[in-house]
Image (cartoon, rainbow over all chains, first blue to last red; front, side):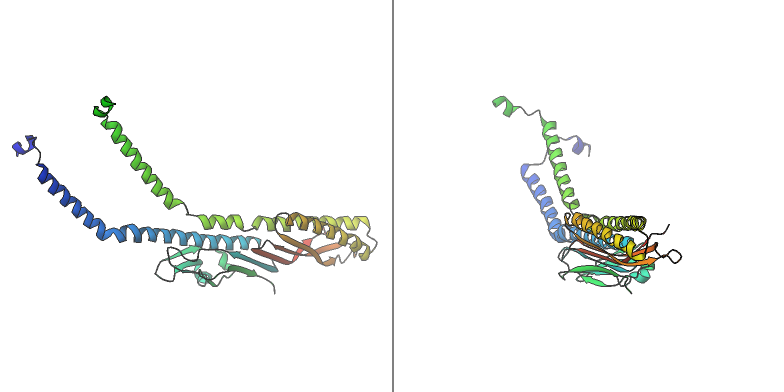
Length: 147
Length: 152
């Protein structure tokens, strides 16, 4: 052991080559097998999550703004634009459960990814309902208090 | 040149160059991921004309109140004489506001829909009802009516 530690002789070039190439081969195999998960699936999950949250916040912001300027007897209608797919997945913006749960849900219709955004108590005074599919060409939020 | 090629005592400089270049790559990767975060929520705040509409309604209220008081002080012999002054004042205001807003790419319309007279002093105006609409192409707003309190 002492001899091994104090010895400053290195491997032969041949042995070194074999050791290095086998290490690199093992490393390559690991990367190759996990490349799809590591390089595509995980970043896509992050991107979809971020974008859904962003879109949910946008809807929440618009509804809050509409609530702030809502006329006692009148109408507000506004058009908004969202990307038709996020990370290659079409999605639905769903407000049907917001009357009871105070949330806007942005959910993919391909996979089970979904993000919920709170509505900060607005739905107590203004009930919100409706579903918007990302693939339709026009999206609108409508408020009507005309009797 | 030959001296430069054979001089091998610059290991730390070469190594620090490598470190800096790798950290630059890392920064570039992070910046790519952060580029689109928050775009839609920020855009909704900027695009939705909340302040324009609030300003329009608040200004129309103030102008209608002033016009009603001015019309009353100009000639208050009868309901008709007050209205005869009030209607052109509001029309004038409305056309000026329409011009201002059309310069910013939106159409507005302010019309007088109803006048409620004071029950004890019948030539004095109690409340005014204004119809206000606003449209900038993506957002349509209609308040029918906005009730303006005139009587002090």
